[in-house]
Image (cartoon, rainbow, N blue to C red; front, side):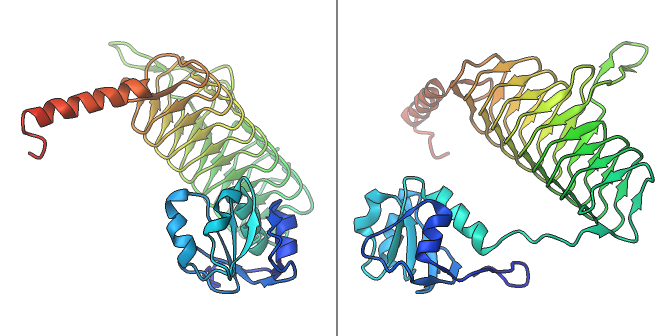
Length: 343
């Protein structure tokens, strides 16, 4: 059970209702009107709880679980205990996500501007916008319907935020246009000047950064991540992209749709990532490179060349992932052969 001090639970729901919510199918031998009151991990769930199994390495826990219901793949039905009602689907994790969202919907604050917030007279706020304590909304900023600005956030002049977007506590936004349904977690900084200067023996001369940041619909950006505005062309974050905490995106970078950037990854200026590129944790992409659609970069890898669509790389400098693991295996054999493997 989630801690009720922090999470308000809805429900209960019947299995039939949960099937409709998730898109899963109720197994024929399960009672469709059976009430389910909560979601919980397999190891902790009780008779009134629903759990899920997506990773087969945890299949052994299924037979020992006391969960009253479980979402799982059809191929695992035979491994479930007799007492357990089943919701079967080809994508258990996605189905569980929908169910968990139904039990624990995100709270919606009351519309209005807190009396400690500072909102410029020329700013345009839709009637149901929420602006939290000590937040600042600059001249000419536009906040569309359902926008939520949390405590201490700063929305710079002329910034536009689309419907249903959430700006977390202490975010700072400037020189940017934010789409619909965007989620910015606490401490995100968007639109800061890019890292551009003319180097020279007499000193490094800053180059004006005259572009913007365009964040398209449905993007999520994690806590304390930064996205620099373009130097002339815009920095663009493609629709539906998911960016983890502590990620740095340089000026003029362009992300396609559905990219995933894991914590502490970074992209240098003017790199271009096509749709559904994945950067694992602490990986880096050098400037002015092009990563084709669906390319995947392993953790702590350094990309120093263009990648073809669907290419998977690892290491620093990054090389094809199969070659990387062959090299690791070869090195390990060489070390073991000398008898120094444990030293």
